[in-house]
Length: 150
Image 1 (spheres, one colour):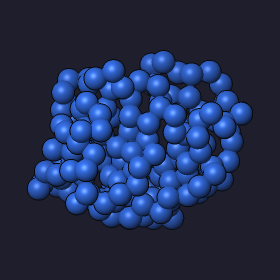
Image 2 (cartoon, one colour):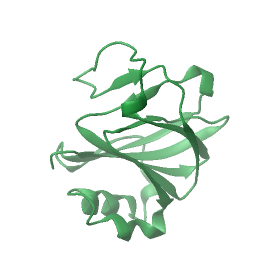
Image 3 (spheres, rainbow, N blue to C red):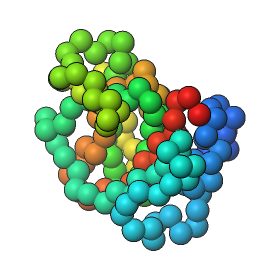
Image 4 (tube, rainbow, N blue to C red):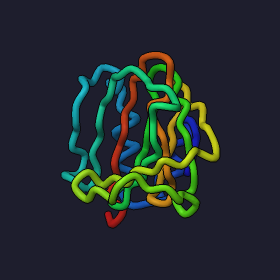
């Protein structure tokens, strides 16, 4: 898991294939003006989801993990208090891994909370269980999905 601000994005470009294209998208000058929806960056290898939605309470959320994609979650407006826990320490799966949605849900409690404000991003790898969209207000976010085997 990585938590940083967008002006430091250049430090992560070589970390993983697909990150350069992902951060090129996140550095677009018109990012805040993009309508809600899905944006292909590199077919299904790298794509972005623009989201504007009301946050949820910690007690109404569950941890999630992904096997096929790395999440880069950038907050454009609001504060997302994302929960985090190493997947290896999650002991309470909620159902089976959903291959179609690339999602495994856990009912475990997060070990840490990341107060992610406007201009900050978090990167969650397949070994990171995370609980996004925790906020008392409206959140405007971009989630870029980068294929693990890219």
